Image (cartoon, rainbow, N blue to C red; front, side, top):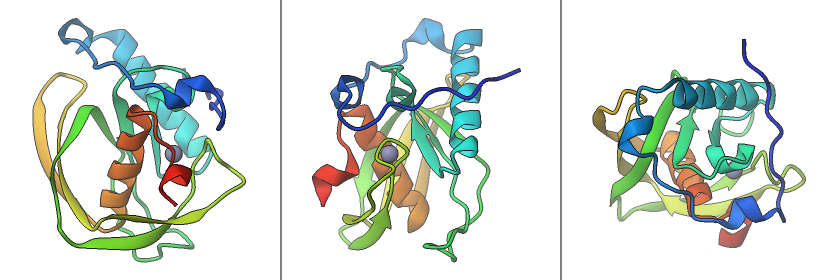
Length: 159
Ligand code: ZN
C-alpha cells in the first residue's frame, strides 16, 4: 500500500536546500524503495512527468523521470518511470532549446525555460547499480528540471 504525499510549495525552505546524497547503506533498503514508490504515486496522482524527493519533504538526491505525451508536448516519448538516485549530469549538449515548464510545487505558474537539448546523466538504481543514459528533448528537460530541485532551484528562477 502506498500513500499520496503532500507536495511542498514554492516559498517553503525545503525547496531551497541542497539535498543530501543517498549513502551506500541506504541502497537496497525498504526505506528507499518505499520513498521511490510514494514519490511515483504522488507524481501520478498530480499528473506530473517528474518529481524530486525534496518536493515531498525528503532532502535526499532521488528523482523520478516519467515522460509521456501531453497537451504541450504531444510528441514526447512515453517511457516507464525511471528512478534515479544521486543523479549527475556528466554531459550537456551545446545546443539549447526553449520549452514550457510547470512544477507540482509552483502550480499557478508556467514558463519558458532554456535548457540543454540533450544530456548524459549518471545515476544509481535503487539497488546501487551505476547507469549512464543519454536523453534528448522533453525527457532531457525533465532530468534537468528535477536535478535543479536537488540543488534548491525552481524553474521560476531560470525564467
Ligand atoms: Zn518541479
